[in-house]
Length: 401
Image (cartoon, rainbow, N blue to C red; front, side, top):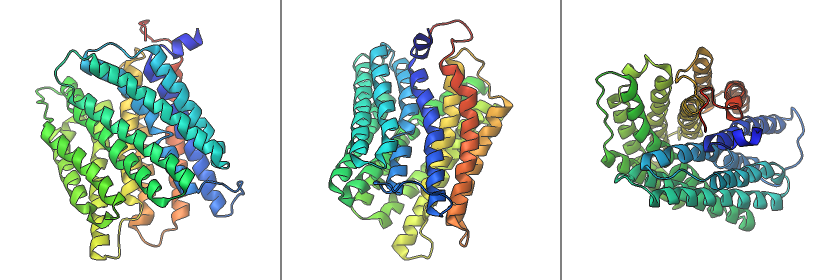
């Protein structure tokens, strides 16, 4: 009975391991940070902590929520048949096995390679499942669905590049893997979902609202994001200000035109609008950092753009969107209670704290990084404690799914 309930909908089987990973990854990273400062002793890793942390965040965390959302939303967008239980459960099992096996793989590289191969198979199975929806679509507008599908494909290619790096130890493969993960996969997915959903959700609750989502600007953003990846891989990171200024300007335009001020009256909606502000800020910081490299300024961004994007934009949007999906598809009212609202703001705090070492010289980076990790663990751990039970309990309204 428990398995039947848990596997009754794709968001259930994907969001639960995603919630677990959001805690496990940061707990491991906090231990690694403390070990680096001599506060405790971890086993000597076979995989460098930086690349291990990158894989866990880029591939071991966000894809669970991306597939959980895509398997739920894309069939509705396309008016196609639902994703089969065999497909989404198979993808869940492979992704989860890969994510779990990666932890011992940090200390034994053959296990890491096996973990990534399993995870990549889960990504591939998910792509085939989404492709069946695209082929069975009965609507003409398939642009958002195709954009997400292609971005996930770029993520799969990035994961294969990471696997190639493990086998060859050629740094170019790692650069390609990380560039594809961030700028070919995650950024395009989150931008596409925001372009589709933020105006639509806003139109559902704000009176006299006109949806504004020009596709031309979305395509410019997606091309600019891919352009950033290409420049990084080509060794031309100082020129990424060209792509990132365009991204920042368009993200700011969308923020203003989507009506962020009017969204504040509804917490669950405001979370999405506020999260998108981080996109404009992250792209602006990235552009300034690249200009610093190009013009030989003393400040070149450090990790500030990465964490503004990863924690600020992706993390905040994940909390907002996953809360909405979890509530709506468990028969709960679409309302963010006070706990959810304050946990969302605690995530904002984690993002701001993590930016401090790169914005204010003289602050000890490891201490601040550890503090940000603790804040994330408290906020995301409390979010998981609240929402995870919804994934194995029947819907409150008695409906299937």
